Amino acid sequence: MYHDRLLLAAGSSCRAGPPERAASPSPPATGSGGKLVELDGLRGVAAVIVVAWHFALGFTPQRIGIVPPFDPHAGIVGSPAFALLDGPGAVMLFFVLSGYVLPLAYFRSGRIEVVLRAAAKRWFRLVGLMVLAAIGSYLLFHFGLYHYRRAGELTQSNWLATFGGGDAGGQLHPSLLRAVLEGSVFAFVRPADMYDPVFWTMRDELLGSLLTFALGLVIWRSRPRAGAVALLLAALATQWVEPRLVAFVAGLALSWANARGMLALPRWAPPACLGVGLLLFGYIEPRGLYAWLGFLPHASDCRYDQIWVQTLGSVLLIVGLLGSERAGRVLASSVGRLLGRLSFPVYLFHFPLLCSLSCWLFLAASASLPHAMALAVAAVGTVPALLAVAYAFARVDELWLRQVNRVARKVIVLPDGQASGQPWGRQRIADGVSGAASAARDTTAVAP
Image (tube, rainbow, N blue to C red; front, side):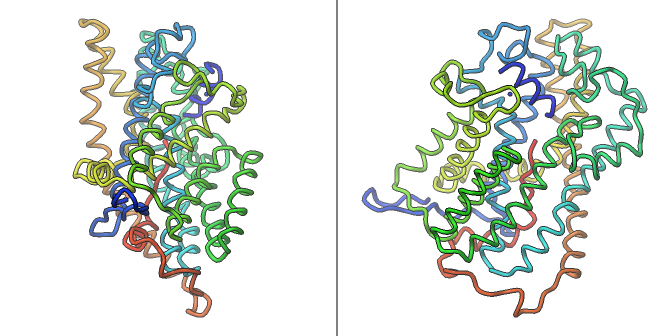
């Protein structure tokens, strides 16, 4: 995904009431653990979009419309259909989801202890599967099970042929120690894409999470106007530090407004938010239906236009989802719940599978089948393998998270007089927040 940014830069990177009444977004459905199952399902969908985006970049780059030297007019960029492939947009959606979900437990209880625990364990919560993904990639290198160079040459995808930018010079020398360090340290302090290119988002995820916790402490006890000013200043500051962090501020602002009962939506608003949100989510370049957005800055060094438009689209999608019973039921279904549960391991492990199993299947099928059929074989063969791997590592992740939570509860315990301090308007917290907050501490809305 780090190379995706370079590629895009080069290619340019409520329950409804009567009509006359206003209604706040309806409470999100909650599972036995109180999890925000609609948002879990949305996160799962975003993970699937990232997989589709990488598959398209690697195996059908000519169909996208932003990959040189292919004809840009032959791709789907500029069409709302691009939302089905918008991996960069899915990353921003992950970040907005993190900003929305992470402060919910604190907004419910007002206990500083909750924030301290969540902040202290954030790195541990992320690093467990990351190290395993990096080691798995190292083993694939070590045993010669990667086939991305040959497949990339055949599909004419320089992105695939260079391992998503991690092996641009073809001189990668795998090291177990370096793989462990990349998964545990390097990915959080610098762009790290040598063993798993999706790691580039993890630095933003960690920094954005800590920013969300700190801002949540500030704004919850503030007057509404002061809180709004603090959020606005924070959003502006991110544009000089790391522009993508604005997505966390946007998610936090939405969570704060909903928890304080500030959101009042007419009956027609949730469907409209879903429609406009999907439209904006499909933006990646000011072309076609999105040509009118050409006034936004889109310099090659930083695609502010993508960040702003996709963040706004993500916010609208969440508002529409929480306000629409029908959409909520879809994403809270058994399939949606499964996708949400598997989203983190799908995100971390799909790229090594694409560069090993998918490429091997494609090369084997290409020897006797037309190009399109070979692509179908690669896609169909990858899906069950990815689901199996993701399910296995989801179980590992749950065990890891259980241990992290146990240690955090023992280590960070504040006296009641210091830990609580009731927040303003606690009785006005939305039902959805109070019902879901117990599990929100452990929800990981990481980016692809």
